[in-house]
Picture 1 (spheres, chains in turn orange, blue):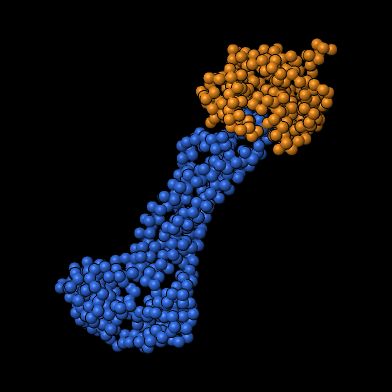
Picture 2 (picture 1 turned 135 degrees about the vertical axis):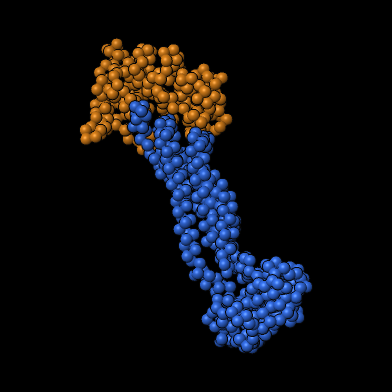
Length: 233
Length: 395
């Protein structure tokens, strides 16, 4: 793996069985992402964006091809190894936030830290810092139901950063938010990237895609255009 | 955090959780009652036999005490033989019979026990003194109440009353000198305790030098079974029964009860198991998205399994605690119904509570809670993360 390269996917294919027929969600995607990059993946619904993200995040296995992150093959990892790898190296942000309603915002951020075995006092401190980072220091003891959509997504972003991941993967992070709130999240992603976080975001949101330094256009399970690549070519 | 998540998952649908807990409580109550029933009669019967420390009963050959109306012939000889066996400390003869009891214009039927008042083990005097003279008797509360008598009153008692001919085998006056609690009497049974010779003479030739049984007490540290064997060898016309052999016999007779208790107890456990499995499975199905996300952010399968198991166990145990209280109340109520069963000693308990029964029921319910959580926790932990998230997004 080239120095500075964080992620390398080679000829990724993912087929799904759907009834008697198969669906080729990915049909040979090759992709390199360097440390510090901010990549947006765009394309029409069903083009394979989320499937690609799932494979890059080691929550799904490719039918063929390889995924290497930080020099480690993640496509063939056992479930336990993949779980441990995700916990330490990958942050996830989802369209529907998926915060634990039973826990406070701060406890939600603490969750991955607790799973990683960070002592209570230390994780409390770290979670507090992250809440401040996403601008919600005052809302740390609120439960998700007491927060707006934008605030919930900020908490979800703070949670994704808890174990200082090398890679942040986001699937339609502004999909459930209005334009103003979406803009706040876009700004937060920009700040995260400036602070050194590598981001791959799947989106339909043109503003979010425009904020990325590199845009991958997908269609029918293939990357059909790599804008940065084109610009640099 | 694991406990918080489990607890709040249950509290998310409070009414549903409470209803499931109530279901488990009913099931736990039934289980406790069945556990109590399975061991209660046996324990109660054993305590009853041992209440006055008599470890052996001697009845006519091939019979059990008061199982038939057969009598032991040559009772004084048998008593002497038994008394002479090493280790035997007390031999208490008992002759049963039916009496017609009269006081002024009142007449009632009563069961009489002819005993040796110095060694008897059939009743406890609660007021007055032990009968000594041939015309003195002890009477149960039920008899005194029925006939309106008090200590000091003279009753006319008769044996062998023929209601058609209105004749008696024997009739005589006796003085009530004691109010007594008869240990083996059925509920409401009118009892009278008289000196053995008095009842023998009243029953006439059929009971001359005869008894229904002997109760035998042996010394501390004496091998009861060895004494029983010696009695059976030394007195061929009688059968000695120890507590252990009586219990064996009781076990055989009560095996239907125990089987019933086992089947009903198993059924109630199964119902509780199904209730909890259903509730926790529904709860898992409602939050598969959350679970998939937990897995995605790096939460181990084991944690998911543990959280869901905790939910199952929490419902089971909280329901069980309420159920144990309910089981005690229903057990007591059922006991009063069964204690009225004719012919059974009133002191006999069917649903006898012992702490070990509660622990046994709790242990079974805990195990059941764990088992009930296995399927939903397996389902939660084995969710395909990407597929679940995609389906959730589509939904």
